[in-house]
Length: 243
Image (cartoon, rainbow, N blue to C red; front, side):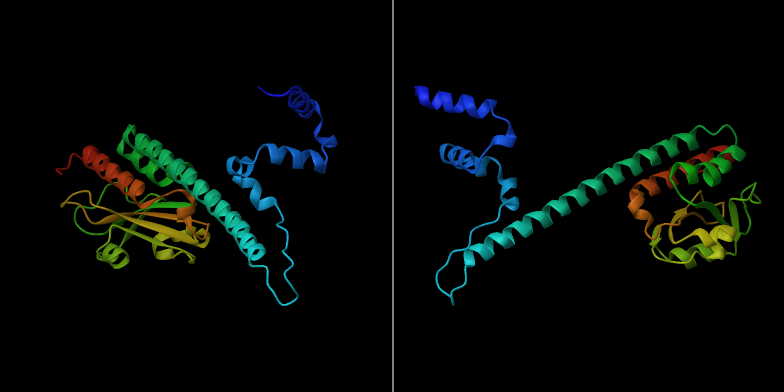
């Protein structure tokens, strides 16, 4: 059983304000709780290890190693915080893309669908420009003269995307051939291919941001491809086109 003296000492520690704790109190506590640093390893990075004096020409490697360990712990903590922030941004971006997909599905007319894509998505996804780009040619989509719709020459979409379905470009000056009057705002872009069906011309969704890297806004390629596939299906449905 715990001695009466130890019980009194514990009672005094538990009722003593932090402003009255002395170095002796800390020393006594650590001696009676030798596993304290094992249970609270984060405290180590705030401690200054003592230097061992072994002569003028002898280096204290232990002090050096502890210092490096503390620096490494601080670096890992910063990386952890950056990772958590990135995960939160990604989840937020996915949630906004899911809401955007529901808005597209809820459109009450084809004109309203185009308005949602070219106007509402910019606000919802925190972007500065969203355009529906369609190549000219037979089978042009209706309502292609709106402010958010860009009609381009045949072959332009493949020229921008190549064989890829998504292209992200960072630290750029927006191209007027894609973003028209909004190009001056664009510093990063995401271009997503749209394949409505074989009867309609190639198209793409052009997303522009004034931020140098729009991927930091949580807009990953997979969620945006999901949104593009949703838009394709809605266009086919409203125009009564085969898959």
